[in-house]
Image (cartoon, rainbow, N blue to C red):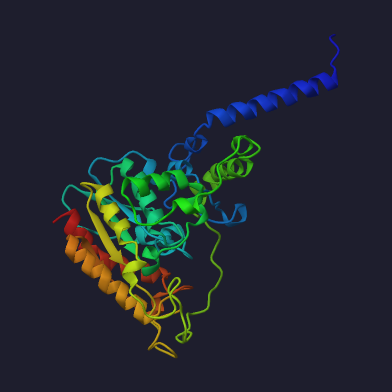
Length: 364
């Protein structure tokens, strides 16, 4: 029997591990595309976002993995009219279950379109960012959408530094910025270049662990239909607001055209090509108590929000965009833990408000 030399065996193992790391770093394989969703278990109805196993969810920043886990990656059915929803946490559905979100509520409505079955796909993702929405729109076009409903709020268009998701997908985002000559200097906010170590198994261990956890949650999603832990009870929103509320870097009235990224919306229209876009100014909680004559709620001073609505309506009219403004469409009781987050009843009412505009485009 051949004698095993532990030291020699350990050295061989270390060399193989080093070689595997170097090959992985040089190859940079698209591991995010490897997915059991839509194959062994159903695709998710919204993009993965959350804390971890305790929340029945996991946040990932890998666009390949996000779309591979989503139901939009399943084959398009005969007669299906695909409607993609873009937006932030209100569209994603905080603090709701997956079957209570806007897309789920729209799926329950009848649109009376002969030979068409409207199906709605939730590509909302928490954090208001027009560039983030452009990234999702760019990816979504590969899945044959027939209509895109882009839900906006003032902070969507406000200039701000990229969030961690955009930094992780910086190269793809920068490609869109350069392609459409977008008026914001994202290059000055570039993350540092990745070193060889950053590209190895060791450097990618956090990302790879998250991708593995996302796949491990597939059976849980398939069995329960739950992708987040039950929401904690929340107190009703106060009808009183602070006296001073900033809008981005502005604390006093100013011309908002210099801070609103309207050219990003024009880029979205150009990017979508023949796929129609419907822009929606989303509903928000409107306070009536203390300081409500100055501020609509804890997010928006009146001077800024009124100006934003005027600018957006003017831009939509000048460019002949499909646009609907639902800013004051819902009562206070339909908001949950945030001036833009809705209760299940609020999501259903919003779906009913959107139904005519969607029907007009989908089945005129």
